[in-house]
Image (cartoon, rainbow, N blue to C red; front, side, top):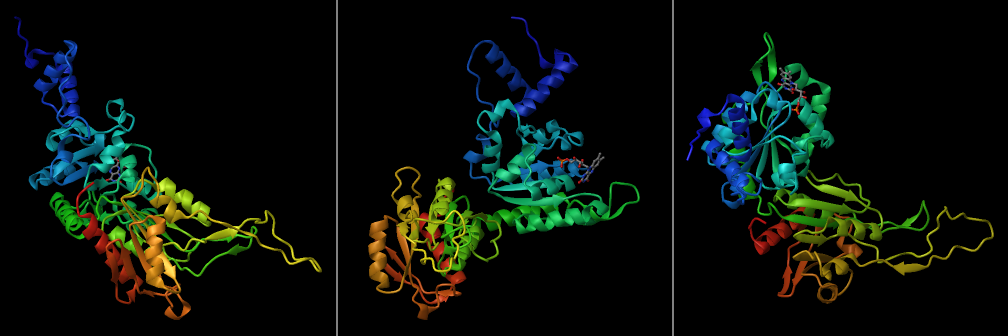
Length: 464
Ligand SMILES: Cc1cc2nc3c(=O)[nH]c(=O)nc-3n(C[C@H](O)[C@H](O)[C@H](O)COP(=O)(O)O)c2cc1C
């Protein structure tokens, strides 16, 4: 049988082979074997890290997704890959189109030991929504260098390429290592974007001050050194696993009152401030959960790192809750109006001299807690309701637990003397099928932390 070695191939073909092998995370020899098998009609052996699902996801290694932006400092990111690998992280790389002008996918892939992702519209891996899988199958996303352009796009939520699509789709913590000319860094637009990104919960390392690549340029804008970035990765991942017991869990929380319209300018409301629900959302986000907060009209600051959806009426709230499913845990802290006006006016109801006072007829609103707790499809594994009672608190809460079909009820006495409704503190009784646990009087933040700790202890720290 005639023999042929890769070395005997012409240079252009060898280069094509090398690129294809790097993309598929195979050695050149394995790539050739795979091509020959394909040609012979055999089923192709799965490439090692060819699809995002393979490789590190199946191991206990912490996973870092490194997005390399198009800046001069991109060359340092090749060293960063080595530093991260040395520490035992499984590293995947995305190169922006501009980054590929500074470093090659081949070099990044060779160092990372797997294929490098560059293209949002790559049919090879987008058939299974590869960008969403890349976004999910990581414990941390590092953007280094984070260009002025990438920071601006992130702050705006723009999704024009693979890197930005992953950055918007990920639930993992994001670490930025900005690198740019000092004038670009200090520009108001960049600083505005930076403030937004910090408010969104993005972590930052650098930039450092010093000599820039451009001749004669000096100032703040140098990318942090690879060892510094690797140190920040260590700290963040350690914090993620030890301090974030709900990492990877999706939590849905409702909060605040609902407004039920009488006409376009008037409504029926209640005294709920939303403080307890907002405090729970903040505590859940701090515990690493991916939090969707569906909020009735309140005047509170949105908690950092929480996806807030604003609604007005009970029906809007139910719609938003159903859209947010599936989740792992649902906590219904909103004071949803039981009734709405059946004959709400399309136009403002006018006061007319001598005319009869308008009569409001009420009709029942959907019961959000009961609807979700009784779902056969996508019922969250843990459904928690609140019972705001003014008498027979525990007895009513026990009856509510059974009637609504939820797993836990957090009961509180909201009679005016307690000051709980709209106030800053709460006294909760946790009612479950196993009994009643009376929590001490405490601030709403402390009650939220206690609830999140209880949830973490109940559902465990397993990754999804
Ligand atoms: C030689 C050269 C060096 C550059 N260096 C940087 C840089 O250090 N930081 C930066 O924010 N942009 C830099 N740019 C501009 C970016 O490459 C440009 O904004 C690009 O669109 C960024 O794309 P990306 O954010 O998708 O990677 C540089 C451009 C050139 C031509």
